[in-house]
Length: 307
Image (cartoon, rainbow, N blue to C red; front, side, top):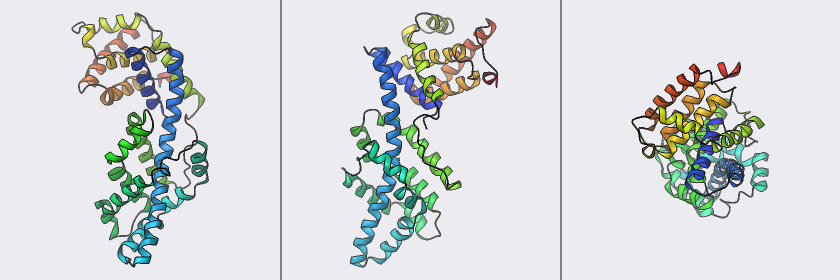
């Protein structure tokens, strides 16, 4: 579920909170567990939105049927009520159980939000694109999510108001949802992810990474200063410095993670979470630091880490 990049981002957020606020390490590690669970709850909530959209489509269908709105009735039936993916999500036993287990009643308590988004969907050009041709049920849901749900400001504000951290998780969850929808369209036997972490080693990686960076005193600070001689310490963004430290410790403390993976991950993260020029800065500095650490024989990688 949560992949290594998501975990790195979660740890980056915790380290930033540590740097900018007076928060103890134990509380931050508890926050990692809580934030990981909330992330998973957000993923499930987004899937449950499809279920509620299906239910709303059935409600509107029945209203229209009584009022003889045949054109819209046929559209709703073809695109929603017969949609294989929406039918799957509506009746999925795991999703029903997870909704109860995690108390995911956000949509049940805010039916008007579902009604509003369904109205927007019906009026959107995405629907008109599918109304005059044989539809691909899976592609319709994918396009509906990508072009309507992801872009809906009212929904974003709703998430932000409901759970702390969901606004930060929004891009990550969207990426996972779109990936899952794409994969499901290829393999209809695909299951909804049932674990927050793919395996225990991923959760351990996150906690170990936090612990090793938060203990840092002067070692990586000196290394960074040596390779940014034209920069005053205060001029380097806090986020950039944390990213550099995290990457350095991955070089020296995590033997199974290839150097190229670490560099690529943190350069990409800097594009999303720091200033526009940060990725170029991080890439240049970290590559030079890597070469220096390698010359000093301070990077030890096992067979997996050398791949």
